[in-house]
Amino acid sequence: MTKNTDKSYPAWMPLVLRIAGVYNIVWGSSVIFFPDLFFNLVGMPLPTYPMIWQCVGMIVGVYGVGYWLAARNPLKYWIITLVGFLGKIFGPIGFAFYLVQGAFPLLFGLTIMTNDLLWWIPFGLILKAAYEAGEMKVV
Image (cartoon, rainbow, N blue to C red; front, top):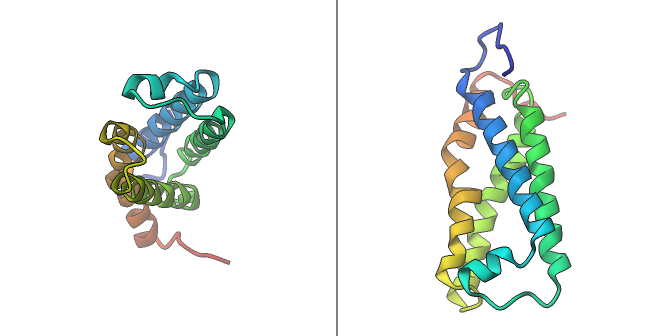
């Protein structure tokens, strides 16, 4: 665990980002190596092009690496958290859009709860703290 010697952020922030990092790497890897798994679990037809789903897994895994690196100093590396936070907002919007159209079963929303909604509050609090600390300077 990163030692926070300057006490500029609470110890839970790096912990949350590390957990998010591990979660995203594991979830992304499972989608890459077992692309049919989740579709079978929720009873959906298998995708015609599983490589597109595997690309989603790759993107999620890369986010995980970013979160792990951002844990070194959550306020300084707020931009990584912001990019992830935006994805965690737009993912559920896209899911809701396709759910209403009947393209996804409601059970597919389990991924939204664990991949997105679970992280809204901690990521939001990290971004709020970075803003209040004056770290959100964009060149």
